[in-house]
Length: 257
Ligand SMILES: [Fe+2]
Image 1 (cartoon, protein in one colour):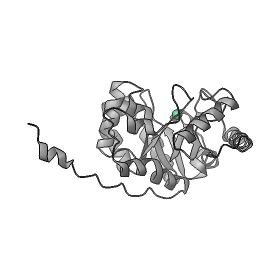
Image 2 (cartoon, protein in one colour):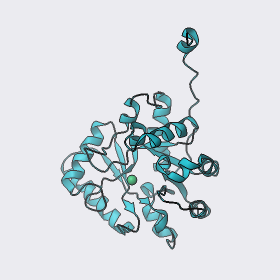
Image 3 (cartoon, protein in one colour):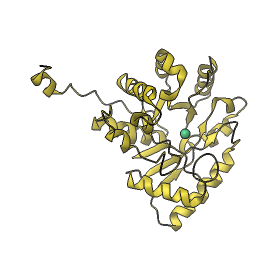
Image 4 (spheres, helix red, strand yellow):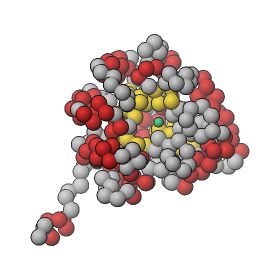
């Protein structure tokens, strides 16, 4: 599996504090069945990170992984806040793209963004970038108006859901909305959004194992965690969604009685 959203770089945002902690996360990611991770530090007004810092961090992390013989492939990326987008030129954006593709991971806003969200996304598309919205299930504006998200998806925006949302890590409202978005086929990718090993670890399988998980269809699991992220890394259009499996025959035989 491939993780498109992971705070794996040390001492750059609210992810691991040092390289040792990063390496522990890398080991955990391998244990959880991930072979490739895109590092996505917060590019927002709080941390003020620039693309060059991410490139340097990735080079140092790759060297440490090789030294420790940890066979995890790492690509550069970023989780870009709407507040950092104004004034960014194309070359700045390209340095923040997922694996230097045309896909940009855009953080869904936690506070009201109004039409700024749609305007920013449309501007990116006009400039040739492909926005991938990070955890829309945690965005209060989408929770209040799912049609807004649907219009964005119909306009070509893809959505990356956090595995923790499916598990219930962010509360019942988010968990319920995550299930709804999956059911309504508004989700294109599942990522870890990992920040550490213990509390927000690099696991996607946790979402498959969760009680009453909406993610039990293996074809969908593979599409979300293998096929779609592979297309992103290759800078290709997303592959078609697998068909929804027929309802369980058992339900039909047993009925509700
Ligand atoms: Fe994140």
